[in-house]
Image (tube, rainbow over all chains, first blue to last red; front, side, top):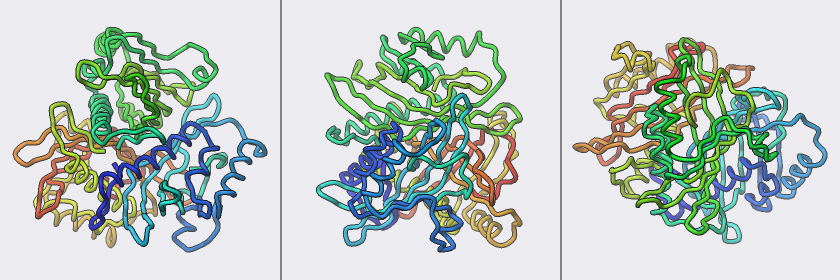
Length: 165
Length: 165
Length: 165
């Protein structure tokens, strides 16, 4: 269940709707259905993958940075058509999201994640872990991410980062 | 909370009942109470552990395959009485399950998992990760697995696979 | 969602309150806000980190043992002021907690966890995994841990154990 931080009131219905958003997101990425991924975001949005070191120091360099759904669509096209990479599976596990604040229609949530990479004919190894910082909004009758900042614990990325987190 | 895929309606009560099934399953395996494991399945059931490579190519070879609760009971007997293996703990972590479809009394769910193995006097290492594809049904007043397919990301199994996932 | 074991009745409201406790705990530790940590416990409480080997054999030696909230506050002071350690991030992931029993106002829950450590300029590696055994009570209008026993699968701790689990 989506948890609410102390002092934040969240109805069971809102919790269920948020659980559905997070569940569907994890499901799409868990199945490698990258084409579904941009649809979880608003048209204007921010999606970043940034190491904790840069994030906390206010340094802007990201591993991935997108400022619109169209850029996410472009990223999917890159995965499917233009990026050259060794076959792999990345398995994501996410912790329960906590609704930290509701401000002017913006739902602020955070959660932890860990991921594991399996290259062809190799054993599964830890990939990236870290925290998601999300801003979720009502958008056309659905909840969507207006912002998802993925802050990774490590600055090092084993082999390379191909798929979204 | 069990999440529902877009277009699938799930009451809070159904979500709670499913959470209880998944929670009890994870608890039994987390405690090593293997004797409780077959009870989560219907008498006629399918339980498989199969690498992603074989699963996606339609190749039938599994690491474990059972076609009835009785075969699961047999498996437990093997763990307790006949299999020879070095002592180990396997810690399973499962992501939120998503209810993908409800068809003719069958609840179709999927979720991600990762597991970690600890051999005696050794550090904890990644074991198998992957996806569960489940069919859950009402059975004698309870929700039970009629089918659980565990698709592992890796084809390689560190040391060996003793316990169910 | 917090799950209830067979035979245990838990209203959706109680499940939500428990989810909020577990979520807030994970959030505080996920953010490294150690000062918030003692507040999740009752004034008289038990917090232990103990290897499975000792736990199951009834041997009392723990890696960490505290018998009051004041000792937890002391532990936080040690992390902040007196302990010398190489910089690191520990990422915790917790599975769904299962409410196993309600007895005389005590809520007994258990859950699985895995954690991952990232040292400066290194890749993320598995840290400790294991099980939480909790006793939660109503305390001043809030749910708090009267007892949290963290049983680790491994007896070995990579580098050292600085932060709570």
